[in-house]
Length: 285
Image 1 (cartoon, one colour):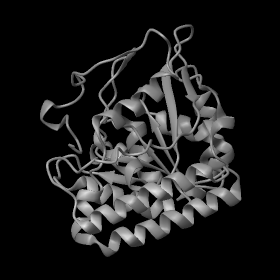
Image 2 (tube, one colour; image 1 turned 90 degrees about the vertical axis):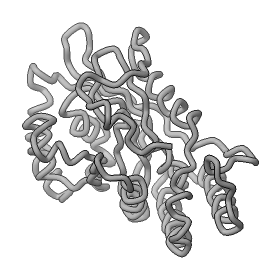
Image 3 (cartoon, one colour; image 1 turned 180 degrees about the vertical axis):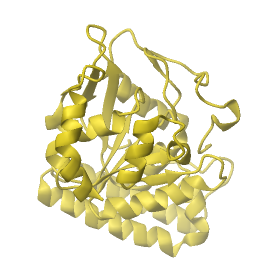
């Protein structure tokens, strides 16, 4: 699938220069030199994913980027370009109508990350009006809590001067340490879960000290593979262990993205007019 990206990249670069897009980017040097890492971005256009891939083309040439993609895209509900990209590239499919999508998506993402791939998530779940960043859903925060991988924040917007698409890439970060008494909401952890959470915390601390060169990222991928095997051994606890994110985690991610957007952008807490109210809370806490 990623060979298709490399073959089609000249076409994509030409498309990005069209007057309707006028793609520009900054901060490409902030991206790690290879996977595994998680990209988190706001959502503004039907070509955000392609624009981000072009912006970090140095790493994208060699390491596959897999976006979390709602199945509605395949049906053309997000525009014809989105439907075409769905058929060309690999992705982590998200069925927003299913009740167990968090564990499924995180399992698929862990498998990608341990293979040094890159996972891309738009936590708003849909496109929002220019100047607004919607509430982040819990899926990507739960993923970031379940894996010792860096998170790369990205801000995407249409520039005021020419309406072109701007992609700003921030500094990668790890999720902060969990409070000592943090629990899965309303349910105390059993001994096995507490042990795994401790291992995840130690892996996160170790990951922060690893260099972002190729050797360091390869070590991170090996650590993710080890943690994935540990989680799989405790299958009965997996669903709870991938629901560790807190509201503060979501806001941390949204704040990191907000830093990469124009100063007059604002957070909103109401559903976008493009989204159905009954589907708004994808991956509840």
